[in-house]
Amino acid sequence: MAKRDCYEILGVSRDVSDSDLKKAYRRLAMKCHPDRNPGDAEAEERFKELSEAYEILSDSEKRSAYDRYGHDAFEGGMGGPGGGFHSSGASFSDIFGDVFGDIFGGATPGGNRSSVQRGSDLRYTMELTLEEAVFGIEKTIRIPRLAECAVCNGAGAKPGSTPKTCQTCNGQGQVRMQQGFFAIQQTCPRCHGQGKVITDPCGDCRGQGRKEETKTLSVKIPAGVDTGDRVRLSGEGEAGVNGGPAGDLYVEVKAKEHRIFTRDGRDLYCDVPISFTDAALGGELEVPTLGGRVKLKVPTGTQSGKLFRVRAKGVKPVRGGAQGDLLCRVSVETPINLTAKQRELLEELHETLNHKTHAPKREGWFDSVRSFFDEMKF
Figure 1 (cartoon, helix red, strand yellow):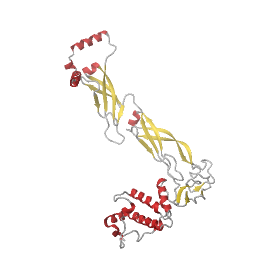
Figure 2 (cartoon, rainbow, N blue to C red):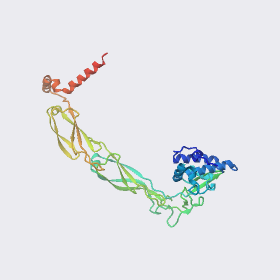
Figure 3 (cartoon, rainbow, N blue to C red):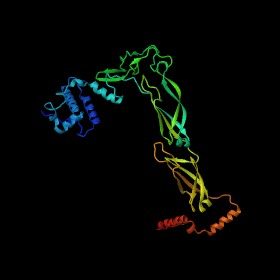
Figure 4 (cartoon, rainbow, N blue to C red):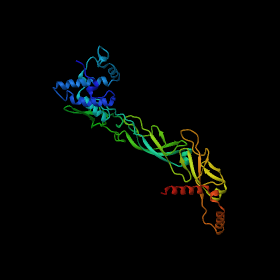
């Protein structure tokens, strides 16, 4: 009798993914498993058929051979599913346990759970001034954390004594509860998954193996860091459990706002106010940088908002690359608190100005406005 197509048996397409194939097999196998259908020969035969199809398609090499040659690939000792399917190796509790294992961390019936755990990572936010972030600095910080108990060396037991094997789970760390065909594996309620019970706890850490402490650390912040950058201090997090390695400490940088400069990556920006006459006549200004003062030449007729670039006066990136620039944005100030004489001079100047010659931007803007309103007329 010809065998049915494996993909048809499992109700999946030929391009099914491994995860979807597994889901399909579980769903169908749980319905017709012999443990759930005692005495049902048809269900048992259906379960065998499903399992044989899954064994072929779940193995990449077997699946490739099956896609090319079908069931003929496994006839005559060509590498079929072990010369015949054996149903004794897959109980319903195994399948059901596998489903719960995916949900609760991969535990399988009878498996041991390691009690050795890595310590938690810690994060510390360090506020820096712009100068500290740009040039780098070394700072001292105090970190509260769980550290290994110095009295029991992290064992949790009183010196001279040792933890005992948990009698509830026999050192497995997990207990199995079964009712009918349902079998669920849970963390042991007595030892909480450790597999051992401390009968004579350390008086200093009360059997925890770790104690709260505040440690003082020196942190070297490299030049060029910016908000969001992190410095990792390996092994300076919380102590591990039962001899597990300590976690790490991550110092995260947060740069404060500066009263003069604004940072954008490797570049710095600053606003430079200039007088009406300096903008009109041009000249030379003195502007600040993080390394001192520099001269900035302002050409005649400079408009408010114009950007001037001062090369290599920005930030040297922490990850390497060329140093950024300083960009100075000039802001022309309108004179206030004029004397009578100053007002008279300005009015005289105003009378001599020709808008088309002396204010081309203003005249061009008004031309655009007039065109805009003309186009709106119906």
